[in-house]
Length: 473
Image 1 (cartoon, rainbow, N blue to C red):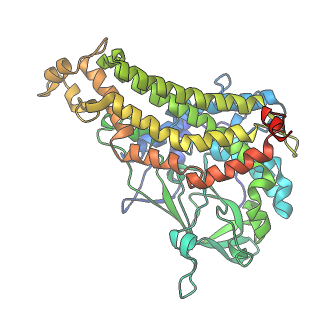
Image 2 (image 1 turned 90 degrees about the vertical axis):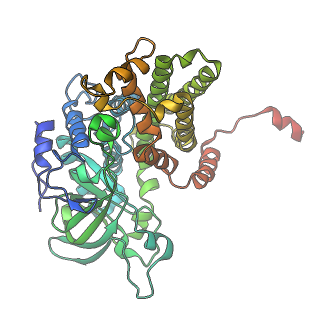
Image 3 (image 1 turned 180 degrees about the vertical axis):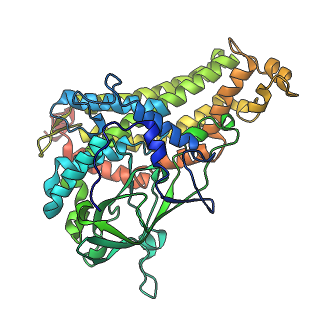
């Protein structure tokens, strides 16, 4: 299989048409025939189509060369800030609710292209695939985690391994078998980028793999969790549009062509992928911007709900809104700090300072759950009882009552109900619960990352004289 010719004129419409490419996506026990029009998936597919259409000159998502900012290597600190501004614009389109918006893995791939030497004999494959993805504005996601038994127990008594591994090579490429999870966005992606998440042992050469593969490749099947989208969609306005879906990816002797192979059998290259390419500075930049915008979304929703109900006049609520505003400003300030201290890396490209980015990731794991707790307290009983879409019909039994009873300050009862339904989406259902869990574990176990942050902080901290030095004299 050769790399396709890039489609420079790609549009949202062509993306939706392309979803009918034979990909096998099982959702809640059924094969989804048409992701672009299935009620469980059409909202997310439609948003991604809109996002592709937003990549036009003057829209802030493409650089001066016409290519997406997320796929751009920065030659200056100014370009780093430009990339960050594009991350912010993308995140605002979804309120930061997409943990795997396409710019995340796009920037990971870009970091690899900028440090292609790490991939040894496969370095030209990285450069060519990056160019292809960049020209086509591919929607990428990754699949990196192993099944639970392999992560925690290792092979069973029969020596079977469930995790993805190479089983043989041919003149055409590497044949792989096994599973990867938790591939967020994979049902909607053009391609999967696969690489190890956990450190590999020296005897696990068959799992030392890094490659890209189209989602519609024969032998690849995605088993997705149930969709959180609602019917009607306006009863779950956020879940119905921004549920990315998470899936287990099953590779049943899938052939990966040689030109899509980036690492094969090299445990050292796999284990050193992050420090060897500097990819964390790229990925953390996108995720730190998204964390700030997501906190901003929660604040705006809480503020609008409080104003509509007149609760913004209560001192307790104003204190809660003040705390939410502080969370927003903390995360924004860390992004500004990281971009302000952008510097040239050892590969000759400019990236953010990693310490503020790591601090953002560490804090966001705790700040986002706190933000949702504050939203619950501010909106209170309105999360449980509010007008639903059916009440907006003037002929419905509850329309007039709900219109009157839920009328707020400068907002009618139906408009107030739409605000409350959005707040309930983030606090009361599976979509909101998944959002909290996702942010808690975004960088792995929070306590473990805190210890890693201490090491990073000490390593990167510039030594300065302090008043404490006088204690030694």
